[in-house]
Image (cartoon, rainbow, N blue to C red):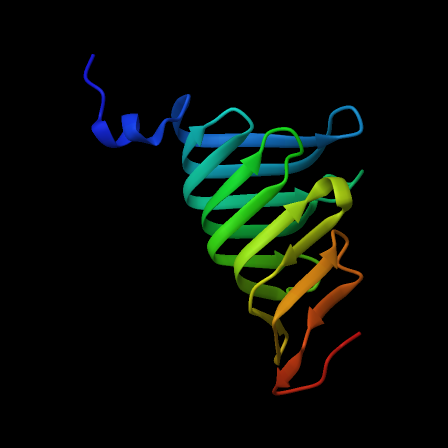
Length: 156
């Protein structure tokens, strides 16, 4: 068997092309669906490469709540926490808000999505920039730290 030297050098336990993962809560209720072009499997995490897409679903409704896209990511296999990196974008389906950052962290166990890097939120015609952001997964409490606006007012 011939093994690509690059793949062998990753030290991964396994490799998958065309990766999908379904996140559940409360005994099997759909919480999220994750896709990526490829995945490298390690003991407690999965490294994701290319077109990383996470769809989060409303609890009990089964409808899409939010969409996260990024160039790459890392999934913790114990907690389903996702670190999305590189051109990370969050779209909140209910009102169309769009949040862009270099890195987003989705933590279903703590009901959070956040970024610790520069963030831009597009809310209609309003643009809010900040040093980071935190939000609950219902997007009722979105906090952009050190916020400043371009073209409008902040909606609370």
